[in-house]
Amino acid sequence: MKRNLILVIIVALVLVNIVLSTILLVSTMSANNKTKALINDIAAVLDLEMNPQISGGTAAGPSLLDTETYNIQDEMVITLAPSGDGVDHYAMVSVSLSLDKTNPDYATMQPLVATSESKIKSEIIDVVGGYTKEEVSENPSVLQQAILKRVQDMFGSTFIYEVYFRDIKAQ
Image (cartoon, rainbow, N blue to C red):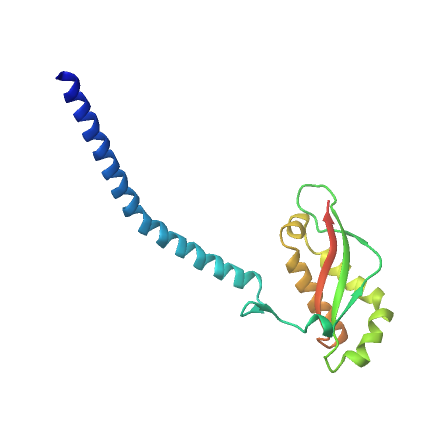
């Protein structure tokens, strides 16, 4: 008799445990869904801030058929700005430019890209050399945008619409 009473108490406690676990699960689901929605909203805002030229989910710029890629041939080793640790740091970069074939300036400016390669390299060295090792490693897209602006200013045109690194290493 005593054994049956203990068995009934154990079964009752198991049922109470299941009911309380279910209540706990249901009550936290709404909070989890609200937290998930908040995190998704924050991530969407941060993505917009990190990629300002992207709108509506598609990248700005011409199609691949209307794009010419110009590779700057030599890898450049650039002395970086001091990081405060007393050690000289360097970046090794390989840069490419995307040219818009549909831009009205393309026909006249495109031949100047190859002849102005040393000036373009100078602009790249000037921009990259102004950043520390940490800045280069953490966010190379900032460097790409800064180089793009300098190169567009140099040519006085936006027929070069993208600068990207084929390779970048900071030491």
